[in-house]
Image (tube, rainbow, N blue to C red; front, side, top):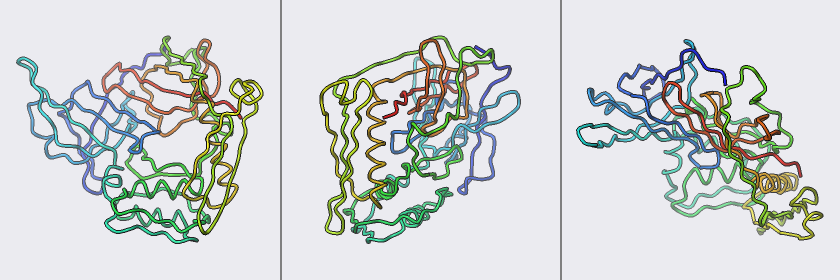
Length: 341
């Protein structure tokens, strides 16, 4: 595995506009940054803070950067929670938990029934909701509109409403980039995606550690997928059958059905794509892989990886990753193999 020459981390306090970075010097080695694409908040961090300063108590927003040979790459931007003191014998340390900038969207809830009428442009409505939180929103425009009247109960999280609207037009769930911006984009089936990152243990410059973990679970994998919208305004149903592969109907001789109602789909094509997405997720979930590399801070949300590492070869979707915030630290990658249906 290739060894980097000089690798460490820098930390910047940010103002309420996520600007005017000021270097923070009180953070020690030993923290972590985690990104879980399947979690609603996506990312979090845990920091170890020295006790010879009260600097951390005045910081509300922080950006963590990886520095390699003088080049800085951000690993994430976070909201800082109140530190907690921990005592171990004569040694005192402060652990600081840092939350995703999606936290305000999750904990803020509607205080009246939230109503979105049929024919509403979904992306425009999402941007309108997110505009109240003060972060930059990076979501490509779409002409797709809601096909049914939608209503959410009092106390529903705005993040739940946003993700429901995005799902109805075939977009990804809302996630954050390394600058704390709010991002979503049209969802592309994993089998149609090109690899964004390559890990090849045959490459002389590879950064993969030799150890890896592989888990194969073939039990109770669905192979027929039904998605439907049932409302006074529209009645849509889409069906997708996976007949190929070791979990397909031909190989197993069994039809294992996954049927779910969805709140809305802008049209039949969107609903059918939801079926195909569910099929690919179901077939890929049975082969889970964990690999370990040197720290590589170019990963983000559901990256598509090409892996060539001993017997592990093919295309994978990264569902989560973790970075050790210390010189010589390790990055852990949790992957699912992409199986075309």
